[in-house]
Image (cartoon, rainbow, N blue to C red; front, top):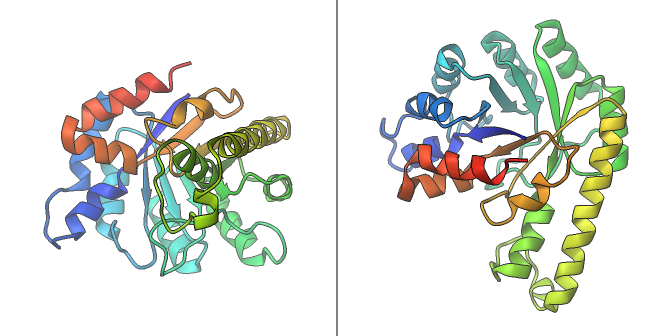
Length: 260
């Protein structure tokens, strides 16, 4: 199992005070030393955390492969092509969201998506699509001739939180929070079974499968046990733990959990 460490939240902390510290660039050598397999960053259209200079410097100086997440807007694809990361993961964006709320729409009118993928491929950049665990989305991704898909694991993470930590957030309705523990555990099993079956389906279609969103030190093990998923991209929980343990220890702790 490979680990991509998303360092966006280092930039989030910096932007809270609009100063130069902490610098996401300082994380690169620590991530490599701790055994991370790649660095993941999200350059959003609103530049709420990572800036253009951050992305440029990280991609040019990192000794690890860079997975650049971005929207399919032509201006963002232009930037991605100029920066030449190892991989671009295309994600949906909404201005009002706190973080990415779901997978990319890869069915229906996909003309803009096709153009974005084509441009990236022409520039020698590997492409991944951030999608919900859905059979039609997988089939559409295959038709779009991308190499990777990344499952949005937010639903799984939310059910896990409801079942085991009573952690309510805006995605949890009052009705859901009042469900009996056994009902939530069954929902969790159903979601894991779905992710497992669809991972195998994608693998047999020739797609490489990654997963991410909401994964942490408590809920990651069940995802690790799905053998057709070969990469996890995890950010918030690692950066949060690093406040108390240091970044190297936080990454090492996660690496120990995802060993197979």
